[in-house]
Every structure is written in C-alpha cells, then in structure tokens.
Image (cartoon, rainbow, N blue to C red):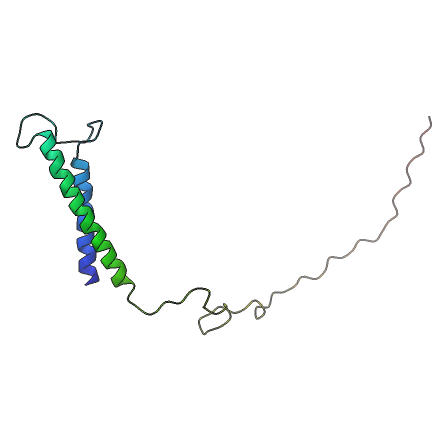
Length: 123
C-alpha cells in the first residue's frame, strides 16, 4: 500500500513541477501560454494551469499526510529521553570504564641545573 501511494505521490510531484514550469512567469522566460492566437488565449491558459496547480497541490498534500500516517504505524516509538544510557542493553557499545587504555610512563626529568648568575655590567 505504501509503495503504491509513494509512486502516486512521486508522479503528482513531477506533474506539479511540469505544470508550474508551463505557467507564464512575470519575465516570460519559461511560459509557453503566450501569443494571441491558438487553442487558448494567455488568460484562459493561465486560469486552467492555475486550477490544475491548485488541484495537484491539494492531492500532493493529501498523499503526504497519508504517507506520514501509514509510515508511523509501526512499533511504538519511545522518546530518546526515556531510552537507557549507552551501557545498558545487549547491542550497546562497552562503557568507558570497561575499555582499558594503556597509560604511557611519565617523562624522565632532566637534572636540575642552577641558572648562571647574570653578568655584572659596568656603567
């Protein structure tokens, strides 16, 4: 059921993109409905394309909501705040305490040497 509804949803989305591109833009760049002669005048084509776009938008939103309802009808979902900490459960990764990280030995200290006294300067 979901696959069929998803296929219909995608076809409606493609049809809506096509209808929107057919409409006359303000600059007239991609509009095809121009010209005073032909099957339909510019105003009639605009009204028809506007109505088709509105219809496709309503059907698109309807299929979107149906997909959302059908997609959420699985196992009950819990909030992430209700889930346990990462150490609980069988598939969880080991906790930080269980991982043993080798600690390098402390660096050897160099023997302390006294700094040389400042040289006396004559004035």
